[in-house]
Image (tube, rainbow, N blue to C red; front, side):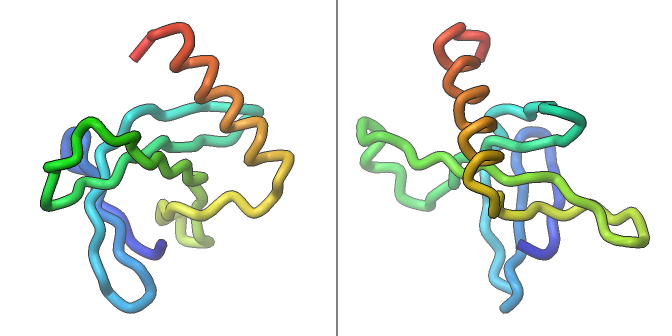
Length: 95
């Protein structure tokens, strides 16, 4: 995801084709010096509120100019570490 803009708890990500997607930021996790954001897609039709919600976890990265971007987590071990931290946060009911 290329571009982002945060308004309160809403994050707008723009992909390579210029398509915008809105997400609600559920949590920001700091793990081993890295920052990750847990996002839930905001969909226009929320008729299936009882269905399980798909969660997206992205890593906060910076380009050479210091601009913030969101990136997918490529490394499986890193992904597991962040997913476990999210599960622990959910289990402790801190959100």
